[in-house]
Length: 295
Ligand code: UD1
Image (cartoon, rainbow, N blue to C red; front, side, top):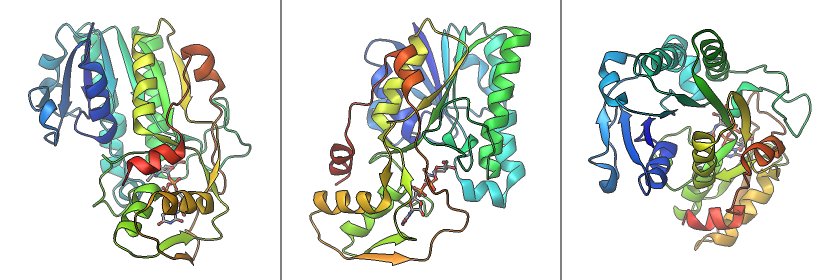
């Protein structure tokens, strides 16, 4: 089996390379170089928005995992056209490149952002999609392109919607990085952990290696043309998270409550039962293990 990963220098892409390179022929593409020595010869410079730079890397590829994306919610608000260009047009370019090169399946990495503010939790895949950012809209729209492309031109797909995933490989210099990365940075710097609002808002956290494990299952599965949440199914409040970070931290720092984030989602917890049923997926790393691995 030969696979290609777009966005191979990113957090998820790099874990996918680690996993897939063990037993498969795999090629990575990204607009940024990889930071991982073991991936140096595997990751090539190509842009999903210019498919002619992509097609040569898709030769004899059976499955494409399409992770390449503009991933910042804030950037999507500042530059909605740029977000659309990468996330929607880039995905359509990839679909066309896959078709042209005879690729059999595309696994599209979407996001829980497609749901917006939940009307019920846990969020199952049939929950209405009401994105609250251009990022969520572009991910939802790209999902539609994947489905319509499959229906009209014939390309098997799987759509994976990861919830709040984290790992040491998340970019800590990005001011908009996830709450776990931020809390760990604060604790390591000996600064107070700042909880936005009352801290009773919940999220569904899972480690990036678990996301990677599920995406691999989606890549190799005989199941096709399905959309699946990628989550733990467990809600953790931000207060509980702060305590978990302090349990793992070498520094004991204060917890400070600051103003709630504007437009913050109160509860976001996914329903994992469809992925469990169709892919036999179960996240392996507990939140405590995951948080400990960050230090
Ligand atoms: C996450 C995604 C976002 C996606 C959304 C979909 C990340 C970084 N963002 O947003 O792309 O659209 O899910 O559901 O993964 N918090 C604090 N203190 C901090 C930082 C955050 O209390 O220093 C709180 C926030 O107010 C929020 C929660 O932690 O309530 C989670 O924040 P964050 O990690 O930024 O992710 P989401 O808002 O869930």
